[in-house]
Image 1: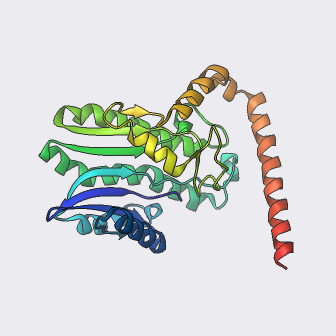
Image 2: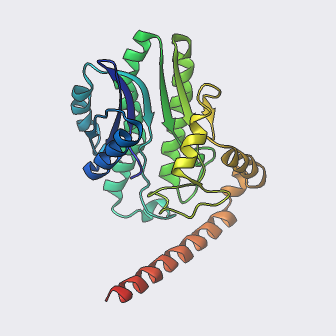
Image 3: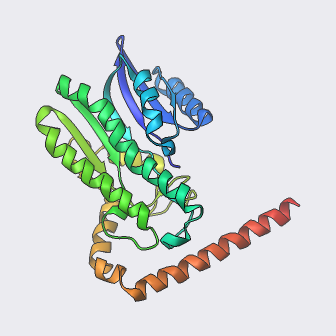
Length: 265
């Protein structure tokens, strides 16, 4: 699972970033970094968004009395660590439910919890992180891309409904970013580090409600639309090539893991 939700709240005159994640260790590390670097008080909420609807009453209780100015829905997961056909998803009943809970339910439920107070105040910002995978159908990433198009449509429609009431709902659709979910892929011209992408994406707030987040990813989006359109992406020829590539990657990963185990022994 990638990074979790963030809320920016104000209570008793203090700005309080509130990271939400399932990892208590990660939460404490981020909280300590914010407090030491930026001299801001924080409040942490531990929650596993893959568990579904049962977690939200407890989150709502912990948010009572807080004025939330900014909500960032950045939680996300895929059902496997690589490209796979839908029926090849490991432990499919569990994984499919977890992906839907994490990628869709988290965004809609957290927005439901925070949006009313923003509308009442007549101001607020919600940033929902979708994905470039939502731009076109993605064979071998079938469920992931489907959940992300849900986030995109939800965000853009919600912005249309509430922008006239002072609330901005921004949808960000990044390409490849080096995170745990992408196995910390090497940063290069096309792949952004998480910190670099966050800085670029935040600069778009107030200028665009629907963005790739940075110039590099916007250029990649346009290039993919021109040179790799949906009709080609969905063709049997292309799907077979993706399947072959995926098998080669899996074999390479397994070989490297085996080599690492031998070295440890």
